[in-house]
Image (cartoon, rainbow, N blue to C red; front, side, top):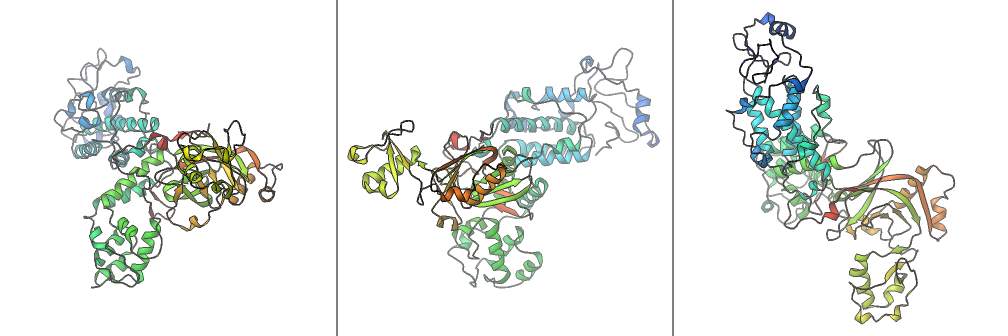
Length: 588
């Protein structure tokens, strides 16, 4: 490692190389630059200050970069194996991906090194690793290995060059996911675009740790998460498999693979070291005491039923390979980049795999509620918007998918279905003329071509409950109450047809009314009691983000993981329909 106060110096008695320039970089009369290297001079330890070196060599200040006739020498990489670019940027046919941008950066820095500080190197490598560990960018893991190999060299010029190119590789990745945020939910390999360099901004000089850290994923415990990733990757092979945890293990029963199980709990922080040591000396492990508590703690971290019983769901999570845990943490760190953040006003996050709605004011959670989200066959879309209308005692306009798949088939079986569910048939959403049910030949009706619409009137059995919250979007998605309260007692709550049912809808309505700070809005309870439909247009809109995070670090620094209910975490045989993962922003 070289001293950041000196520009590529060798030790006393060796050549002092001060530049990465090719010949021809000096103006007339400044002949201290020779072929590829600045003239080497012998210096004593007493002369090693920057000021003394500059005075001795007479380094010119390059004020006009365009006037520099030399170009950067990439020859320092000639004898170095750099194979990562074949995957990172195969179309370039070069050892590096962004040579032109790198040359501009060095020219702007007077051809001095950019990565002379160890803290900068560590930060760059950490952020590169956070992307490489998602396994979405082929070649990036190999590039990291190459950088770490070059870091061991005495001559650090090759490292500096490759680090600068890697910085632009990283910027290219950030540009791509900013333009196509849904890429983080398809999990398909990303190849850097040939046009990425056009869109990348010049490296901001001087390069500082603060500037580099600003590229981290926001609103995450980044370093803590990456420490867990590193730990998972360094652990020995996972000691458990599905074979070890067959059947159901109740409280008090012997756990056949008990030693392997307590190792998993210890590795993942669900069992403290002292208890692990004591249990390791025990011949038989029972589902009792600290083991029973560890099972419940593990279940709580994974959003499972917290009963201390090892059943199929708990067993599946317990046997997840450590490298897969690491990959999912890294993937979700990147997903947090594309989640819209509102700093100065309360905003709603609906985390679909967590089945939870939370209102954040800054980083503080000021409201939370269980929710029911779309089933796997009818996913809730990922997008951003803002609540602009609240309807109390709403009617329910049956969406097209539900009309075709549910309502029409039910009416064909029983004409009483519409009466029981307080529904009427309308000619269209524009023409609200009512169509008598007996005027339709139901035997010949095709659900896919049925021309009329269904509407359910307000009432205690209305599918939307007592209130709905509307927001602009292309998917007819909104938040609403529900008369079916029992489903909120379930741990896994993906039962809807896309819209999101809110357990504490009444409290959310009161929060939104209070947020308006207007005296002309009637109390929510009074509107509900009137039994008539009331529409409240909101002057103070509340931002909403429908997000998909299956791994994160909570406020207690514990790793929380959730089931990948829509299959967005792993490669799929069939691609995800783009409308579900559009990540479009309808807020503005």
